[in-house]
Image 1 (cartoon, one colour):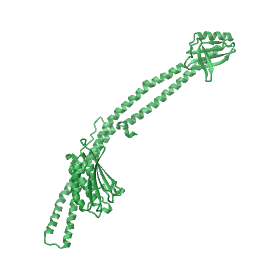
Image 2 (spheres, one colour):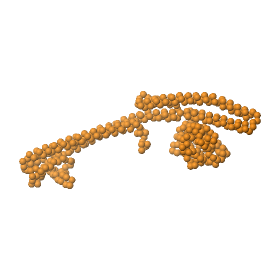
Image 3 (tube, rainbow, N blue to C red):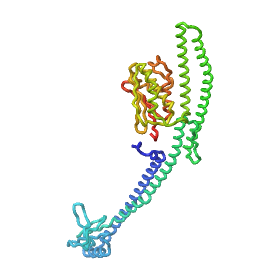
Image 4 (cartoon, rainbow, N blue to C red):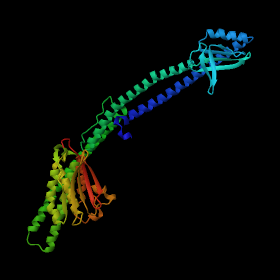
Length: 452
């Protein structure tokens, strides 16, 4: 349920504000409730004391006639809405300012002495037998009702506005904090994407905890940038130092092949040496290309790329080789599949996936290339019906130089899928390896361009 709430309402400041408001509300309600109960009890005790005092005054009457006259005298000056006096004398005559009747639910003030309808409100009554009759005195509980209304007004006029103000302040702080967190998150995304010069640069008005985190991230980014710069320099030095010896070996092998006739054994050894040298060069170039891609530098050349045209071109290039190897390539054109990226790298990605499928599947295997739009993503998939990849190794084959046991007898250095993963990351895509039952399906989900 929380996943569907806006991010601002899932932030820590809002949570803290809600907790503080809840605690303040509970404490306020308990305080108001306790005050109300104590005040109500005090009013209740006062009314009971007044009833006992009133009853004591009427007990002083010497006889029924005197009591009747006293009740009548008091009734004429007493508002029945405040206090009710009712005396039923020995002769069953009624004296007072209201008639009190009894039904299954108890005593009720049915009417006042003038015959008006039932008097509303709650009363506290005291009844006793006195001078041969029955005397009832009832005092209105309107003061307690007014007390309840007063407390409800206090609740509505003070507590509720306080809660709303606290929530408003919490929302304001949450928005401010969300901007800071967004800055940190954006910087981390840039660093992850290879923009090593990105920095948080917390402002002086930032909260101390977020400012500390931002400063630490900037220090980490600076250290990472220095390390990558050192690695680049080492890679450049290695490339410079190895380029000439490798070229010399290639020249020597070429001279050897041209130097007189060679017997079959020597020719075979020469061909193997050339093949191994080609493998070394390919591995060397692949490692350098992966390092260059992981730095994010190719992003400067991004453009709108039609994946359908890229797929059609690569499939056309590999179809003869696939046919010669006994494989079948299938591709169905799909229009409107445009993304932002590097056309050459995207073509190399598909080429690596096709080569991987052709190299590690037996003759007669079908290789199907598809493009599909799923919501705001464009999914490029390469599916074969070969032996597939065990589930436990699907994440491992994306690592650099990892090769499955059954693949160690085939050509390659274990860099094809790692290069695919690096190019996908550069383009903001996700890579997934799935069971095609049988075979393997590799999916790359790219964010579609807005113009597509």
